[in-house]
Length: 193
Image 1: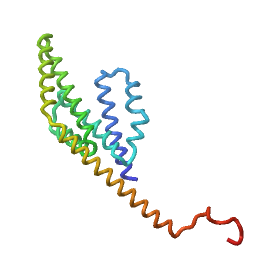
Image 2: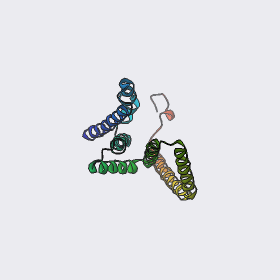
Image 3: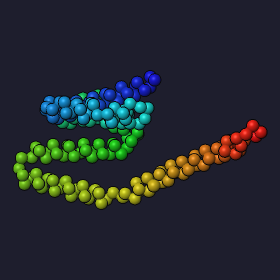
């Protein structure tokens, strides 16, 4: 019970920080709409209220987004916040790494957008965007994705084999336990049987 309360509280902190960031980004307008979609959405409360991985992910995601916004958008740097941001990203990576990848790409897009907004000359901005696109394309072509795909396939295959062995073990246990049992369908409805 205590662990469930801790998981729920941790998830609530993440949801609240997520609301706070959206509230600030939206310049304190349409608070009811933001509150409805962030604070009162049943899906967030349902998935954030168990002893699963989701409460940890929701909390780490909300806190990470809040700390990123505070440090990189509002430019209020604190060493403690940066350590906490790295800790939350590490937690998120350990629990569900694909969320961290998506979050990192989103952070990178936000940083690039903010840097582009500072360039006042349109031609220079277009040139910078083209250069960034060329660099990203070169990076995409230079990364050997077969290593990651092979790792994913091996991991998935191992998990499937483990589940299959577990299923076969359960089936064998049921067969052993059913040998000494009798079936009601084999009984005759009389006093003599």
